[in-house]
Image (tube, rainbow, N blue to C red; front, side):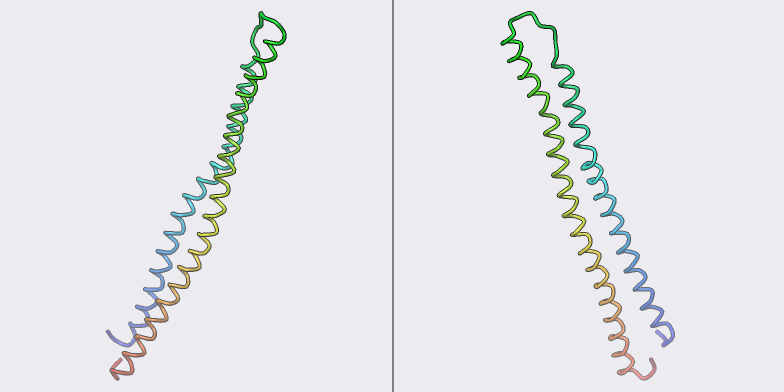
Amino acid sequence: MSRQFLPYAIQCAEIAARRESAGVRGYLQRRVISLASVASTAALIGFLGTVWGILNSFRSYGSSRSSILADETNRISQAMVPGLLGLFVALLAFWIYRYLRGCMEEFNLEMENTTVDLVNRLIVHLEGLRNSDPIL
């Protein structure tokens, strides 16, 4: 390879490494964003389920007050289960989202450092070739 094409080859390697890094970063961000949408909608869906359950818990009655009260409290407590489940899923998804965002930031730094390291190693190798072969 002639002297003028070697720096160009290093630039091409750097561009290719940065392009791959951006591709992997985009793939991971799409997956993490879907987790964020789960975190933002799970609580809402759970509370809508709770409202639906509370509205369905009131029925016509034909017995004594104490049995009506016991039956009503049982139905309302069962109606709260979807809301609590939705809140649990939302919190869990949010915590996982925050953890993965932190891991992605570390990964991005690692990919940037690896690209810089690759370019530095290629430059050192090129200088070694130039020192051993006076034609380069």
